[in-house]
Image (cartoon, rainbow, N blue to C red):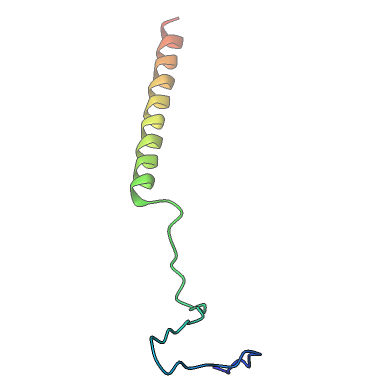
Length: 70
């Protein structure tokens, strides 16, 4: 890493405590890909779709029964 020249002169105390201030830098890491939908949400959507399909089929069967009887 290149040293940054500063207009301030470094002063080291002869007595007492010495404190160090680090400059935080960005650290690159692997991207974490998250699913747009969780598995449980997908299962619930499939169950809901299946329930809606069965209701539609039952309604169609009822309509056909009513047309046959009338």
